Image 1 (cartoon, rainbow, N blue to C red):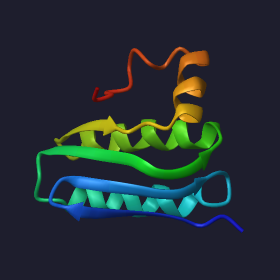
Image 2 (spheres, one colour):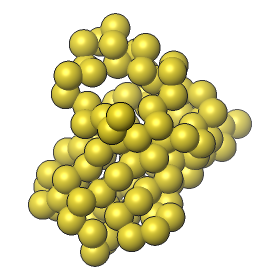
Image 3 (tube, one colour):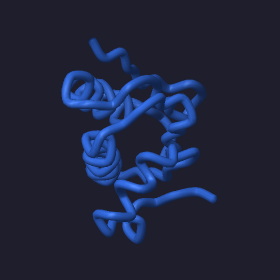
Length: 102
């Protein structure tokens, strides 16, 4: 069973943790949308340093969180993207649209 979570570690800084796959994604999707909408911060960061493993579902989650942030009138950037997610994004031609921090 996949274990994963998302939380607002500090105002505007969201921590994505665990294994991102088709089992964990639906709950993460709902929880992340709620957290982004409720956050008082207008500039948000999604920290992926604690992501253990990800399939392409993880990239789909990032794109969904980007849409959620836009809908809430916020910006969202991504930091500490794991190598497996980076490779998937590269193969899919998504590195240009993902708001990655250096």
